[in-house]
Amino acid sequence: MSHGILARHGWGALAAFSILAVVALGVAISLAVSIGEISIPVDTTIKAVANRLLGTTFQLSRIHEGIVWDYRLSRALVAASAGAALAVSGAILQAMLRNPLAEPYVLGISAGASTGAVAVMILGFGYGVLTLSTGAFVGAVVAFVMVSLLAAGAGGGSDRIILAGVAGSQMFNALTSYIVTTSANAEQARGVMFWLLGSLSGVRWPDVYLAGPVAIGGFALCMLYARALDAFTFGADAAAALGIPVMRVRLVLLGLTALLTATMVSIVGSIGFVGLVIPHAARFLVGPGHGRLLPATAMTGAIFMVLADIVSRIIIPQQILPIGVVTALFGAPAFAFILYRARQSV
Picture 1: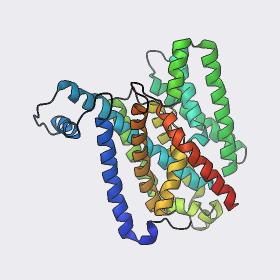
Picture 2: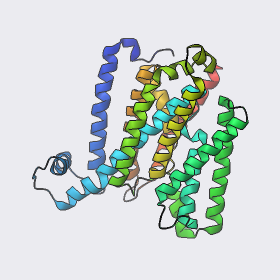
Picture 3: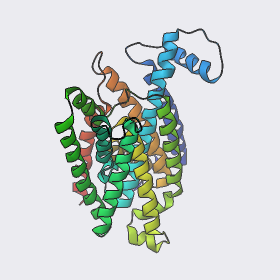
Picture 4: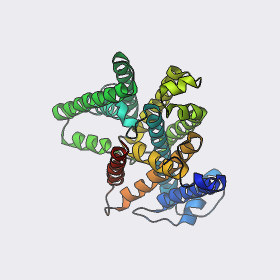
């Protein structure tokens, strides 16, 4: 499909979609704050936020106000930031590598982050200095550097990057499994497994102050390269013929992708399929032009992740399911469909 279903109806339809997406994200965040073991009315949520941000004096239950501000709102904002960042990273990789199955985890960043977190949690590396998130971030950066060096040594092409990412993922996953098997007790192993499947349970406001600026700043920088990404969809040679500095742009965008993914994985753990499925859904709606695609991908990813978090908290009574399980339940069938479409187009 050369144009999205909305793009074919002109800028009016795209503008309406943009407004609807903003409203939908606001509604999703409001629902995420209201829904849980203790139900909180939406008007109470609004009043609690107004008391903190605007200095109003609405009389509210201290328990409700604490749940809204100290727990659920920060969790929803981090979910939205992570969904937007991972989805945008997937859109960038699919354009640069010209592969509809490319996504952030193809670079091995998630596997490296898992190894870094496990090293801090179980082996005690950097104990007292490194937090779990910091260890995961360091592991993600190390994985990206190793995969980049491996790809460069193999010729540096798009296919080489994908193969290097697969090899790096397998290596770091094996290392994580080895550490857990040989050094973890039962409680530690359970904690690691829950983190590896993605978790927003421990998210608080300091995580918002990291995830929010990284997601917004990374998205803004990616938008500066929207035209270059359009050129990359026709291949590196075509981009070079149009005057795009291919190596520099590729290095910058891969670095941005690594930063976005590593930051979110270090906060919420490994969450798959967002970077794979959401860009395809956005492309179906607004078309392949990255000036439209990147904003649509960011908003769709944010909404999807917030809704997935709601499902993870209510699907099993009195139990929170890892959010990665929820995204996989929706993402795996979509992945199969994308794979089928890719095979049909060959």
